[in-house]
Length: 268
Image (cartoon, rainbow, N blue to C red; front, side, top):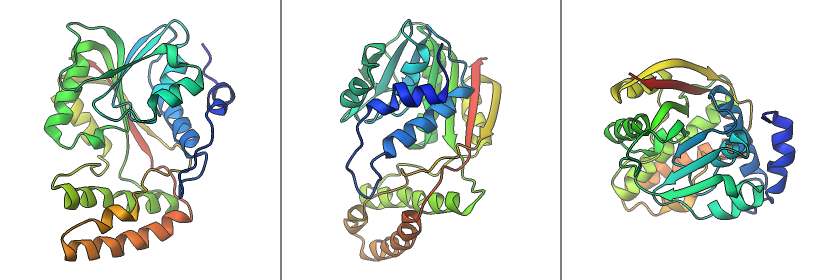
């Protein structure tokens, strides 16, 4: 099974056209997808596997590396409730679309009556589940339908200035969304101990866990200034605009992925 990073970049990433989405660089999607590929090296993925991905998102950032790793005889069922805007375009460009089955459902109620998957994965998606109750419910469903579960998420840790820059801008997202919509979203990154706790609350037993440094630029802390300008509470808007301006000026000079924590677990 091909797993070499240089081959992945040549055979898959090179097929995806550059994107015109300033202030993000044209290759931001390629870089973020490569980070997911590196994360998945810690997951027990083999040729021919049936893999369930929770929270594939509009850009298929983890879906594409998964489809590459399961090879021609494997399949990836990619689940998301609403974010599909660029999914078909990107998976088609990579030449891996035929290995991917997109499924628009709520991950708290998966439509599989038995263990249909060798592995279920949730990569950089815990933070979007809004509450601990939802996190536990989703992970429980993953255990119900898969033999093993792999979860990975950025950690609230900075080992250099570029990682601190990322965290400073990213940590505004939760407050901005709460001020705009009255509920939290894009929650602060959890520590590895919290990931383990969530897995255990969901009925899983940790097989392995660890951390690693992606060693790549990171662009997804960015949130447009226009979001902040729409906050109705004048005092909160002024406070968040000041903090956003300061964090964004640093972010423009370069940000880096913080360390990533990962957990591999089986049913208890």
